[in-house]
Amino acid sequence: AIQLTQSPSSLSASVGDRVTITCRASQGISSALAWYQQKPGKAPKLLIYDASSLESGVPSRFSGSGSGTDFTLTISSLQPEDFATYYCQQFNNYPPTFGQGTKLEIK
Amino acid sequence: EVQLVESGGGLVQPGRSLRLSCTASGFTFGDYAMSWVRQAPGKGLEWVGFIRSKAYGGTTEYAASVKGRFTISRDDSKSIAYLQMNSLKTEDTAVYYCTRSTSQWLVRIDYWGQGTLVTVSS
Image 1 (cartoon, helix red, strand yellow):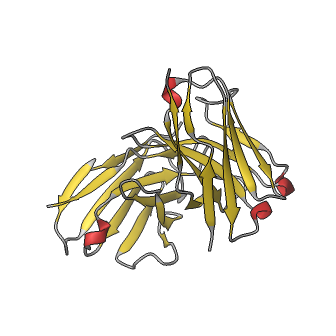
Image 2 (tube, chains in turn blue, orange):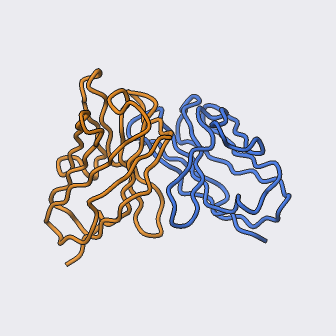
């Protein structure tokens, strides 16, 4: 199975900061990567699909990039509602796999 | 508005069975593949299984950890997907999410249900 390694595992930042989370795949997955946001006690929510496409209704401060093995999720200016856990997921191969998550906390 | 509502979770003893349901609304259920993803308490996300639409044979895929024990099925007339879980183990304890896939071949998720908690314990 393809392993996805997210870094960092946790991150403290302030409102207004620019934040970047990376996701590295153990083998190439083209652009078959999604990013999700999960808040405590809630279901994950799709933010980015196909590595760089913004899901409808998601604020434009979120962006994704990368292909092959290295991917990034960037939040250009953190808002209070962005403090959550973020997961990447590859869907290029079976089984689909998720990164271990990055917990974004308020500094 | 797309909605996925899971039900059927609860406390079950090891070795027993449980069936989860996912009732869908807001889209043409029969046109979509559906998938189940679980999350153990305090842990990350783990894909469980996938079912294609009837137009693509209604075929299924499963994670190695559940293959042979779990079965996914669908009733398009009721817009419901099911997850039949047999021979449950304590490590199956998790919140189970029903998800919609935008692809019939890849687990390309766009919507998630709110989840239902399954606790396997004696």
